[in-house]
Image 1 (tube, one colour):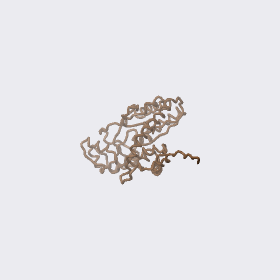
Image 2 (image 1 turned 90 degrees about the vertical axis):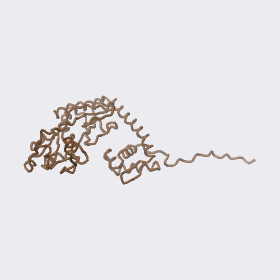
Image 3 (image 1 turned 135 degrees about the vertical axis):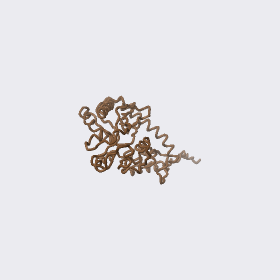
Image 4 (image 1 turned 30 degrees about the horizontal axis):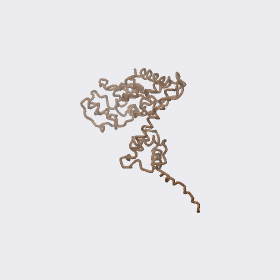
Length: 312
């Protein structure tokens, strides 16, 4: 009798490349592109280059075997798969952030780095003297400063402490009002010699005004006074606050400048002192879970006192 040879048990087919998994390290880039709607916006948010983020997205799409974004003239539109992945990725990101905050909270070591974010004007003109004193008194702490007019996300630890002009509304953040920034209309003496000083708020419209491009704060201020203007009436438009100040110092025109900045140059004079411009509140913000960390608490308290004193 011929011996029957048993056949090996059939094995399931090997999974397709798209089901083999993917690199989770690519998720932050993917989520940033999804939230920003473009590679440029995501690059600004993460501080990376557009080509790098483009490669990350392309690599993730290759690993998944499917497209995550539709390329249009208006940017990147997420596919249904991208939306599905994002829901799970955000959950993982939230868990990772919570773990990082927990580890930071449990650390009792005072030495180390604290990351502070503030607007360009604050980081350039308000913080340096404060940080100089802090360095002498807290030499074991290193400070990283993120100079940006964008509101960095404290929940994702893009910064440990934020100096902001608006109060955050997240319950997980601690916000303390430490001071207020006064504003006024200023011009250099060289400009005033050429054009004279305005005598009424309406006179400003006949002067060389320095204003914002995308931000509508100054336009809304004029409307509150009963004057309807457009940004085209600004002789110089930019959302860079430092450019505003340097243009005033150069004698370009009249700008809306913080009192503490204007005090840096005695040749810059305030015009229309009777014009009341609402102060900007200064909020010092940090995450509730890391506020008890000794290192972050020391820097937080030091900044609160230093900013309040500098703007008093």
